[in-house]
Length: 126
Image (cartoon, rainbow, N blue to C red; front, side):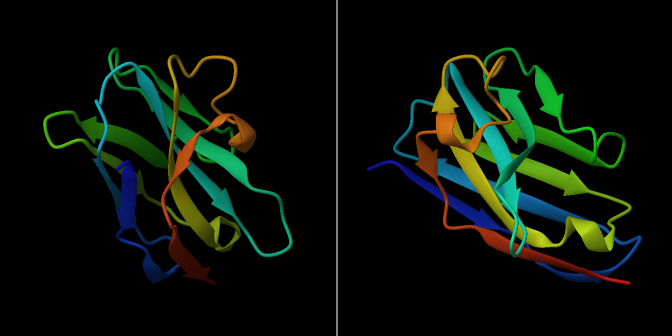
C-alpha cells in the first residue's frame, strides 16, 4: 500500500525555521518526482519545491528560492523540506506528493501528482 506521511509542521515566528519530513512506503523510490505543495486558506494549492528521485534535480517556486531547500534520503525513502527565514505568507498546509517520472514540465501543478500525504500545518506569526 502506497503511503506518504508528513511530519515536522508547527508554529514559528517570522524569521524562524522548520524542517518537514515525508516518509514514503509502498514505493519503489525511483524514477518518480517527489514534491512539496501547500495550500493556504482561501487559496489554491501550489507547488513549493520538487525533486526527481534519481538525479536529485531540484525545482523551486520563486517565492521560496533561497529560503527553502528540498532534499531526500533515498535509502530511507524520505523527503525533506528545510524552511528558513519563514514569512507569515508561508502559512499553509504543506503536503508531500509523488508524481510519475520526471518533474520537469509539471512539478508545480498539483493535478499531476498521483499520491498525497495527509498534510502538516505550518503557521508563521509576525
